[in-house]
Amino acid sequence: MNMKKTTTLGLGLALALSTAACGGGNGGDGGSEATSATGPIKIWLSNNPEELAWGNKMVEAWNKANPDQKVTAQEIPAGKSSEEVIGAAITAGNAPCLVFNTAPAAVPQFEKQGGLVPLDSFADGKEYIESRTGDAATQYQSPDGKYYQLPWKANPVMIFYNKDLLKKAGVDPENPPLSTYDEFLDTSDKIVSSGAAQAAIWPAPSSEFYQSWFDFYPLYAAETGGTQLVEDDKATFNSTEGKAVADFWATMYEKGYAQKEAYKADSFADGKAAMAIVGPWAIAVYGDSVNWGVAPVPTSTGIAPEDTYTFSDAKNVAMYSACKAQGTAWEVLKFATSEEQDGALLEETGQMPMREDVASAYPDYFKANPEYQTFADQAARTVEVPNVTNSIEIWQDFRDDYSKAVIFGETDVDSALADAADKVDGLAGQ
Image: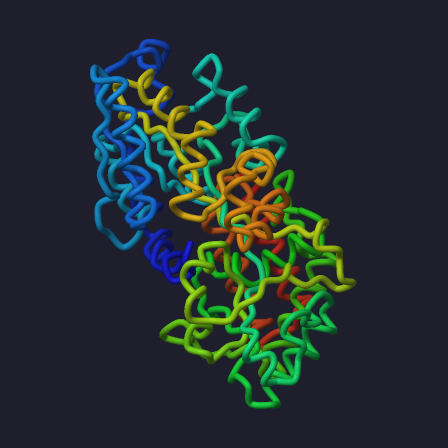
């Protein structure tokens, strides 16, 4: 997913979710009668052109084989964010059967509204999800142990770097030292002090709750070996590892290696920053215009790439309780996430289906497209946002305290993390 698309997606989400919470969908799982009902269904697809192309072909294949259970697909209607539109549809009771663009962070609120069907309601639901996704599936279970979302596709974020700018800064462009915090800081200093670029890296310094997914969280996942921000209803980040990550970023901002002002366009594409934290979507976006390389996110000690975790930046599929023909919807969901259709998605979009060992599942694709292999390897080690109540509020509180201390230096890091942890504990435990 393009980070600019991610930013657009998040706008208005908190407002949308709090507004949607005032209403409700049809609620619950619809009962056994609904889960066995068949007939025509409607689905929503992302407005990403590549995903639309895949989705329309998938629907055509389904309809050809199942003319009595026709699927009608459309783009998610326009709005400030996909989540705002989905939340409003839940409130109105007219959500489609399936949305192939459900953000994991929004699932707790949609679930609270009664807008989602637990996929465990289907006899083979739990087994299908866990056999397709593997151990990573458990990150997508709700606190009640059920799956209200099917893990669909991931964009594991890594460090994209501009080889030409690194060479200009006197850094080896083929093997840049970026593994440890000290190496990353030293490389960043060379980039900025040489004038090769205005910033070494330029994550968005704005306050939207989701921005921490593209600065703090990937490095925290790596530093901790795969720990989520919240586990067992308790904040985990007020720790040695969390402080190390926050101190690293604080140094980046203090030294001017990362900028405190927002950049209105794409700093990496424009050559204003020599690096960016992005997913595999970046290969198609930057591939023809930037002489790029890719590396895992850094850690304090330089964890080996094959052991390094990162943020998944996943989008999933959920079934919505307004759906009358849930039996058909479930069969369509399995068809759309079959090995064949996942392969088609990979071919069309370059995004990683959340299948166990995706690299070995599609060897021909990765042989023909070796530039995606690194992201496929990384896809085996990703961390998702925690599936907890008050998810959006938790991320917003964290972002607010993080920004004050790390980006703008208004408070000290230790106090900020402690204050944020206290707020998060209160919200997660509700």
